[in-house]
Image (tube, rainbow, N blue to C red; front, side, top):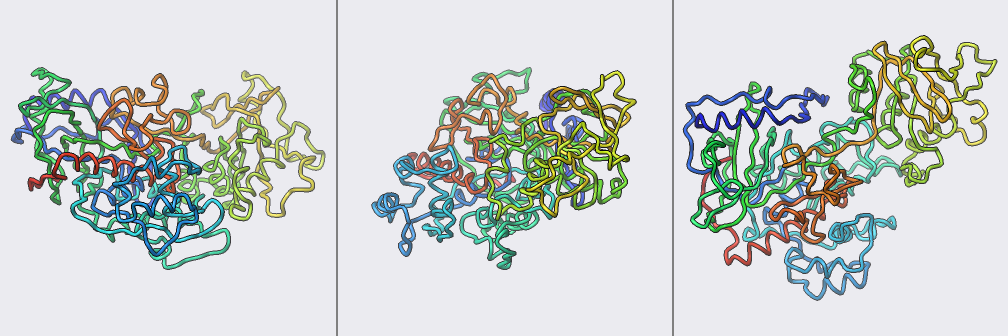
Length: 594
């Protein structure tokens, strides 16, 4: 790498930071790091190359979204299975009209018309009903697709991920159960139960553990021969658009700039291991420059730079925990990850004699933390802003027979609420009164259960040392492990041992211009999977504001594996149709640049 590019890389990294997730043993530990600190400069003896390699497609993220898209781009092609009948007669008639044509070559808008499902993206609903017909009605019909390998449909691509294939599933607590059924977590062409040795627990569990799912995704990549497309332990630090001149030279933002070092001098320290075909395309158009580093043996970090004709954002939604933004949130006993609770329990930093653990949030991550604490006999204070009767609570949307553990948590949220009336029968459970923040540090009572609410519908298996605080919010955390809570008419203070703030996560698109805000449905707000997903074309998943840039999965509102597969279908179909129009699908130049 030339001195010019080395200096450019140094400058770029000084102004970029990210949440980098390192995996140590079985626990995922989130560490906020300056990328510059984790990214040593290369020796200046590396020779420059004329141009970095050009890849047709770079997929950022190796979770189920990236894996499924890699499968479709590797020549695996879906056709209607003539031995099956879809229960939707209108859709089945449409499929019969073109039964000899791959689904990827058909009109997805026509096929999707009139379908309804639990995704806002019509192709996601289409692909789901082809893979799991009538699943929302409780049926388990076989897929109506058969898969054929067609090498002429193969599009060379790279999948860049921070760990091994499976993405965030490797970092989840392994003994919990997934919300979705195990079969809904499977990817095309490989039955989940076949890889999981046919395990069926009971009526509640056709659900799976994260450990089983992460193992399934790892094995899926091997079984389908996709390994050559995956580059593990890679961290993307910059993605930005370049222009390609008519004579084939690459221009940055439409012009060259010697002060910035241009882009043609990017070093040839690129991924080691396998080979992949390159596109030999000198036509004018848009290229994307993708920079980052790969972590190899002995914690060595090797920078890379490559060009891509198309970039797919498949990074998921778990990169950046949402914060409360209150005083003391950066104190060492405040965490934003369920796995930190399991780690503390495993290291015996918490037990039944510890001060309570404060859990903030009313979603499933908070419920998982409550279950973990209760199973370890650790006292819990549970704070959430909503009323227990709020119709938006996720627990109200889950069937009791399939999700008994979450309904147990919801029952406790409703019945074991805090009260300011101290029962005389519990002299050791002192009352918390309304206080001012100036005396917060002096009054740290233990919580009191509301006996009046423990009647009729309380379950036998409820955990006695759990207390909920509906319609409360956190005011501050203090360095002496005390927290101040704000209720409707009062302030309350408690001594706690650990805090878990579990109020959701947002994607981290720090490697894009302006954190990628301009790609959102509302470009004035940060990208949020629920509130402000990336604005895409509904049938191609291409960003409306950036041709050649695609997004899928939680970034476009598909938070369940069952539906994010539709993004893979839409993107693969779009790219195959475009490449087919060029006259030749892919021209290969055997550059072994991975």
